[in-house]
Image: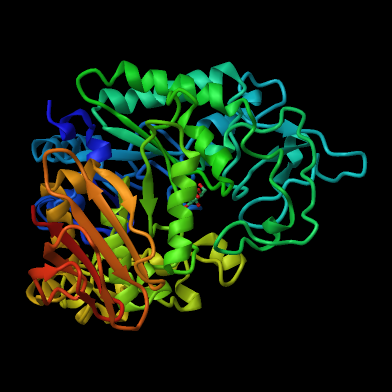
Length: 545
Ligand code: GLC
């Protein structure tokens, strides 16, 4: 077996996140849908050549949090299509060897889910304990000081039954109680439902939230409110999140979920990816499981908030490698539907360097739709704001990174026949210039950079699964590393994060073949002892034996 063959698809491959509302609208109602994704499969498998797509939620939902409030875990919202469309997507994707990962939202359902409607109907209802209900304190205040990530108390008073219920996010998203065995079994059934439909894995929403302190103790206050997280979370930052998330009991539960996945994995390996917003490396790494028996990939968000400088990147890479258990597989993320678009967080040359970094580090890259064309954060007029968080806490909204995909320069950006003014969020005004069609024609576009990186990665076992060795002391502005694996070419990645021109001296090998420059204007044989990098240029160089 060659070195690369013993690795699984989710280790070798690249995952591309699709926000279904915004990828492609096939029925012209201004909202993307599953038939739209099917129409764009060529783009995913032939133009980009990614290996898997992760779909943000498409379940029936009142859309209080745009699908992260699920009203039925085993169906499709009519806005996106139906189960037949989903089955067609699976079939057609699998025919192209494209894997499908779906979002699983275990921490909370919608308040319109029949389970919550039952649970809230009376204190005696058998599903009462499927959610967390508590009496008020004597003075009528909530049972503890826990806060909702989206602002305010995590408790909502429910007058008909005279109790509070817990919601870590919106009040329309009551938290499910995984300590109730019947709820747990019902959620396992949900996983089986989709595994039977041949999904290749799950991205688990706020995976670290599903087990809380059973005694519901108050969180301690932070001595000085500060953010562990790259994006300020407002008043949520005032507490140490000790008791409302990440309880030790979460680990046995993920072991069970992993076992369930393993039952389905003999012929088709399935993957579990956890959205874990925990920034202590050790606590984060625990989600792999000591014996690698929990999540396959706890998502690593640590590249998102750092200064894009060699020292900071090195710290992330080294801390991650030190923290993960032996044999665990890394992953990296530079954008998603909750973050400011990378093209707006970084300069254009830095966005290109980030693309090269993401696709050549050791570990699975997770891309976000539209980043490959440098889609920018859109500024949304107040009357068109959609994200409830942004409406409630100005500045924290996530609409700007969720705007429709820009396919063409035509009206509606090739996203929707509804036209530019009728899409659910406005199309970024730069779509006439920033779009897939034009960038495919423009040799030096960021899209062509992504395509070259993806294609080289696919052909180069060292980049997919090879070892990672940092090349130290090259220059303080340059982050440099080597990827190699027995039996195939070694690659040197040299990323100049400074504006200066650099002349670098790599002692071994003597010569290399420069395969990709982030500026896409050179492919040449280079002298490794006299290697020139322009300001903010990144290169991937194949060693010449
Ligand atoms: C996750 C999702 C985010 C959602 C939240 C609540 O953080 O990525 O979009 O609002 O969970 O479900």
